[in-house]
Structure formats: structure tokens, C-alpha cells
Amino acid sequence: MLAFMVASFAFLLIAGVPIVAVILTTATFPVVFDMGAMVTLPTVIRGTIAGADSTVILAVPLFVFAGTVMSFSGIAQRIFNVFTYFIGNLPGGMPCAVIITCLFYGAISGSGPATVAAVGMMTVPLLVSLNYDKTFVASIVGASGGLGIIIPPSVTFVLYGQATGTSVGDLFMAGILPGCLISLCMIVYVIIRCKIVGEDRATISAHYRLIKDRGLIFLIKDSFWAMLSPVVILGGIYSGIVTPTEAACISVFYSLIIALFIYRTLKFNEVLGLMRKAVRSFAPISILLASATALSRSLTLLRIPVKISDFVLANFDNPWAIIIFVTIILVMIGMVMDCTPAILILSPILLPVLVKYGVSPVYFGTIMICCVAIGQISPPFGSNLFVASQLIESSVLSVGKKAYPLILCFLVALSLIIAFPRISLFFVG
View 1 (tube, helix red, strand yellow):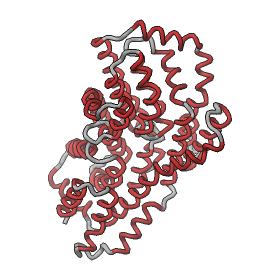
View 2 (spheres, one colour):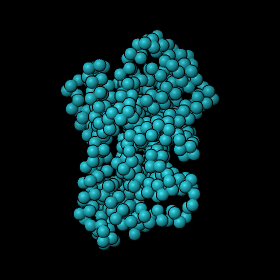
View 3 (cartoon, helix red, strand yellow):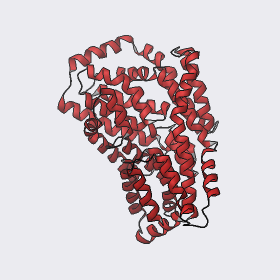
């Protein structure tokens, strides 16, 4: 039964059927082919409705809207200038400032492609004008955008929490150190590459002086409210004052106040247009969540997770072996499937297996999000690569080739996260 459903799922994907139709079709297979008496059409319908009817999932459109407003407000430019002031004149300083900006901006947007677009539209032309190779710059932005789904508040962590019942607040805290570790690995690579390949130091120094002449006080004052955003959001969640959903609501009002009244980069008549844009971004996620919940219900009623668990327990006697095995599967799936359906479909199936080995749901959630982040920057279907390649009007493959060393950086960091669970659980109570 499982083999038939998996084969059908894969065939429909390869045939180019939209992912939502693939998921719902697979979910109704037990009904159509009378494969399980427990699965009926009403249970599939109820599962679909339950997937979209959730208080936790309300955080997703709110964070998406807040990130859209922040992106429109020129936040990325202000953050980049601050980091450039400190490290812009060092070897590899400019590309490293891009990585740190993406790390910080990820705490505002909560989305990988959104981070790539917002930071890339500003930094890619700048670094190309400083005589950096454009495909190298695009690969840096594309890979660094992967931090957007790891650094809290992350939309993918909300989806994982919704699919598995894990605390979203704990997941947010778990993403802080892994995101910093991944960015550190990429920074080391960039510095080494820039020392080997070389840089146009005269042009870089001239641009750096323009930033330096503006003064640190001015730069901090200009970016203060933008950089305070993740502090307000995460501080409220971690202190227990607000829930993640409430924090998402606060982020919307905070971003609107900054854009409308402090930076004045947004007009009141433009808010509705940004709201429409956010709705268009979230609507596919909502439909995916509803259909994936229906599929998860069907699989549960068919006892598929139990059968997979029994198989794994019968063939593995070491928790580290199963974690490594699952990690390899997740990285491979992330290369051919978008992160949202991968999380919504696989997490309810895999987590019960790992829990029997004593694996923390928060620890596994961090690993899973890191794996799908690697998928976002890996050919052939990495969504971040598509966004980054459009910024330089180049092919996805050319940007993907330059991204291979950065993917290796992700893998090195992921290995450390797996080997030392405390990295992800350090801030989790």
C-alpha cells in the first residue's frame, strides 16, 4: 500500500501535476481504491479543513505581511551599511557583510526567497560595481538567503510546529545558534576565496570611505528601528509575554509604524497593495498546508507511520545511524521538492520514529529545517537560486555551480549541529 502511494506520488510529480493536486490525489487513493476502511471521503475533507483552521498558522500570513512591508521600506540597505562600516574594508569584507545582512534580515522576513530578493536587489549591483564576479555574488546572496528559514521568526518553523505539535517558541530559539554557525562557515570560505582570487582593493576602499564618512552614529540612528525588530519579536516570545502568533501580529504593527511614520518610505495608499502581495504569497502555503494535513491524516489512519517506525526499529539499533539516514533522505528530497510540502508531508511521518529513539522534536526540527534550507540553494530546483539568477539575468546552473562550496559550508555546519545537539537546544528551556 505504501509502495503504491509513494510510486503514484512520484509519478504525478514527474508528470508535472501541481503539487497540491498530487497531495490531494494521493490522500484520496485509499478511498478510491478501497485500500483502507478507516479512510473515507469525509475524513479527507475534515483533514483538509483542519489543516487551514489553526491559530498557530495565523502567524504565517502575519509574518509574511510584516516581511513584505519591511522589504518595501529599504531596511536591507540600512542594515548592510552598518555591517559594512565595521568589516567592509577587511579582506572579503563586502561579501561577508552581505552574509551578515542576510542573517539579520532573515529575522525580519522569515523567508528564504524574500531575503534573497530584498538583500540581493541592493547588494548584487553594488558588489558587481566593486568588480566582484557577478555569479559569485549571486551565489553568496542565494546561499545566505537560506538563513532566512533558519533564523527566527521562521515561517518554516511555524509550519513544522503546526504539523508536529512542537512548540513554535522553542523552535524559534533553537534556530539562533545553527543560523549563526552556518553563516560563520560561509564567512570563513568567503575570506579564504577572496584572499586566493583577489579583490579590487582600490575600488572597495573608495566605496568604504563613503560609508565611513557618514559616521557610525548616523548609521546606527538610521538603522536603529530596523535592527530592533527581531529584538522586539523574539524578546516577547522568549520572555513569555506573547505567543508566536501574537508576536506575528505585533511585527505587522511594528513594521507599519516604521515604514509609515519613522522612515516614511511607505504611503497609506500603498498598504493595501502590499497586503495583496502578502496574500498572494501566503495563499499557496495555506492550500498546501490544508492538503498536506489531509494526506497526513490518511497515512495515520492507514498506520503508515507505525509501519515505517517498526521497519526502522527492526533494522537500526543506533539512534545516530537513524538520524544520519534520515538527514541524507531529507537533503535529497529537499533538492527536488519545495520546503513547504517537504516539511508538511515528512515531519509527521519521521518524527514519531525518532521520538522512540529519544530524539527531541525541537532538535529534529532544527535538523529538518537546515536540510530543506540546503535544498533551497541546491540545483536543480533550489528556489533561492532561481531568485538569485534573475538578479544577474543568468542561468540557474551557472549560479548553482558557484554555490557548491557554500552548500559544503551548510553541510559542515549541519554535521556539527547533528553531532552536538546542544547547539540547537542551548536556548531551549
